[in-house]
Image (tube, rainbow, N blue to C red):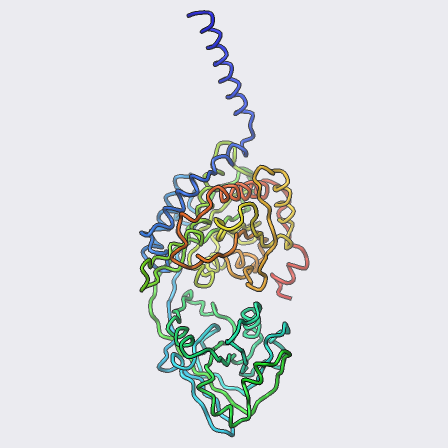
Length: 508
């Protein structure tokens, strides 16, 4: 060997040794985070949002296929079964139902006569519980809904509300939220008097969807029933009673008054389908003999909305909603299984189903937890995390507990991630109540919920894998990895702010 070749070989050997020593000195957490890559994110999203998954409706063969894939990935990552008795899957029963239009109607009576609006023809069910018996009560009229004033109040209790809304122009952004609040203020029922044009109203009737509820828990819809009632069904009766909907719709300030009607609401439902559906759970046991009994739960729902018949592309792939979140969940599971990364507390990875139908899987999990819920120290939930802004993400729950402080500290420690958490940009959309973290929060578990928000492809067949920003998502998932590593390794456990605990948990 020549002298020059020997020197070059020696230098090369020295460089390799130096690189190996540097890698050994690099913190385990940094090496583990590096396993989260854009390529892996996109590969996983491609599997989860493939046409073969058929939109992952609850229940469906596509959902079962998705659950089987998640189980296989949990096994590959070395997670232990989390559902009890050596199983990765926690099952619960569901029933899909629709309004029985043949026996459902709204009837109003007054001195000017009577009017009947039949569901499926002149009226459509929107939300709320389905009563076992007809609902009867006197009528309270509420108009002037363009103001920001609450529609609820003590005068609505045990009344049937006739709410005058103007659908000929955009409704206030807070309208849906205020309707829900009104429904939950203990009226007998809420009748929203609609002036939609006949074609639009007919399209709304045709688009009416079936509802899914957990077996034994018909309280998915907890408020009073809300029904959109077309004014054509009541027109002559309103005229005889000297009620002018057109004038009432022009009001800019609320008007509330009893009207000389009585109302009867008859609703019944017809069962369409029954099934057993999966939550998938895997556990990484903690390293500390005491703290391993406490759990951080990462969650991302595996279901979507299935097929939309009659379209050229009928599969709602749900790449962002929520294949992106599940891909993040699987990346996190793999990262936490890297050498030297086992934290003090245990980590549970939860992929619930039924989220799109009312957070059913997470509700079942929190009501039938495989570990005591008071041993769950925090929930970090992911839903729609692959689109929109490249350098920011909405973090719901920042101000509710000191998890917000942990998140901010991690952001400051890792500027290379170029990811800024921002508060909820659309409070009127009530997103705090619309993903699986909510069921943890209402049971007293501190939460952080990460989402990049909706977009024109939301709940459309066009929510395809090629629209996911894998590079942005990988940076975000790394951020959530660092946050989870902190939560799972430090004392004391996360704590609520007093005000948020009263409002969310105690509901005061």
